[in-house]
Image (tube, rainbow, N blue to C red; front, side, top):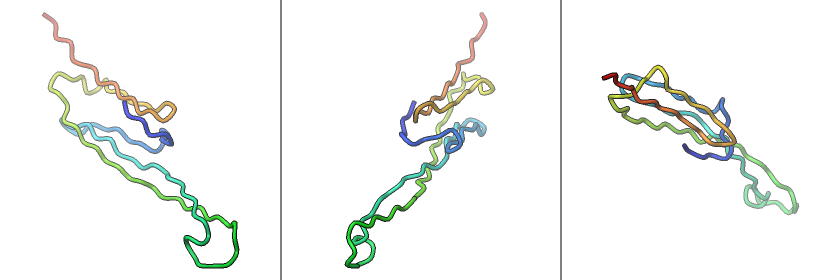
Amino acid sequence: MSHIPSLRPEDVKVEVDGKYLIISGQVLREYEYHEEDIVRRKREGVFYSADQYDRFVKKFILPINVEVKRIDAGVSEGWLIINIPKHIESY
């Protein structure tokens, strides 16, 4: 599990490529700046907001005993939850 407070399901992509689990996406960060921080003016109390997307990619090697077709991922309240089931060998 991983927690990114502003993470939404449409912001993240989880995929399997061969023996790799790849997690990628982008998270919107909102910043507020006082006007004087951006442009030197004499007006006070004016704020600007700026949006910035932080992009990320993480790549993990999957163990051999993983059931790739049953890998499941979801986002809940900013938590990315990935379920990676092991292959149960029959004896």
